[in-house]
Image 1 (cartoon, one colour):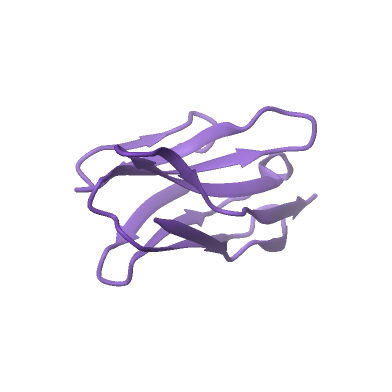
Image 2 (spheres, helix red, strand yellow):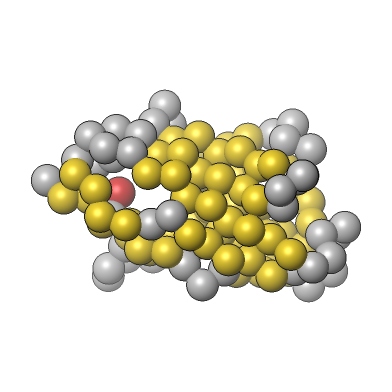
Length: 116
């Protein structure tokens, strides 16, 4: 599977952005997809997870109530709707796919910058 993120950018605090992760290739062995982020000088952290059926969704406490993960398999795209953005949300955001055959597959990342 190949992953390509888009939708990052510069936004003021309190604003919104929607990230997209387009996936292509064989997805039959994908059981879940994730959004991670990595801020400068910090470890990469899991932001949200959605299973292949959409039956289980996880959010990190820091984004709960503000971010929404979703997927549209007809469009082969996963989304992260980010509302009420804060400066501490500034990071490179990565999508990943948990492939049962090869492990975690990563996209190239998209920069999100929230100004105060």
